[in-house]
Image (cartoon, rainbow, N blue to C red; front, side, top):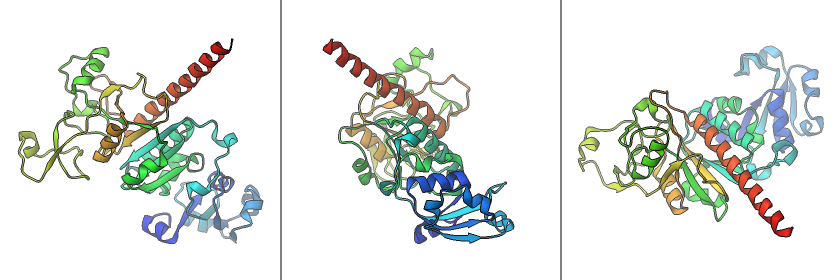
Length: 339
């Protein structure tokens, strides 16, 4: 079960390992099916009133070691019914004050990156996290380890079609993109601000790991292949402007701005693209429809690229800062009017 996404989905169950993760799941309202433990001491460390709903099976520690993906198993493994974010509870004393900031993961395939992104989203206090189809399974063991309990501290909605994404967002949301297109006209100002010349063209090492490596323009035509239109490899026909190979489309017009400029004052969503294919065309269309921006994080030349988890950390915490600042300004205005 731990190693097979197909089996997890067919059975409607997930495997959780370790006392802390199992406790988090139980406290959030996840339904336990079977719990394997090697000693009564480990069982007593769990909330017994919730554990009683599960089948309890005492096994040898050697069995736990054989089943476990951990280097040092804790001696307790549980099988849960696949959790549904709509049926879980996220109490404020465990989650903190959430901000109106949603995270959309667009084809994020690396388990470690996704787990770290989820951990960051929980730390920021995101309203929710949406995963489009193509992302790695959120219940994959490496994702669970990297997330360190974030699955039960922020609502996560996996395997969404793009048509379903708006249903999980506020009506007046603005969707922004974690992107880097440093040669577009509207990003020349950003380059000058960080001391780079207007005609600067970044090399691959200066690019984010999750976006395209070729220069991009808002009106650049691209082949209409949803799975690889934004990949890191370019054919010679693309570079030569050859029209062969199918229909081409123009990118939606999404302006670029520096990440520390104002972009999060009202309900906001941020799209993080996967490192292999980058942002999808659907993400660009959603940003265009909601008057979103490409958020540009400048880096000095010659530095290794940011990966998607690092980008998410920078942008999510900046978004939280801006949203809280907006609330403070609003409260200050109200206070001044009442005096």
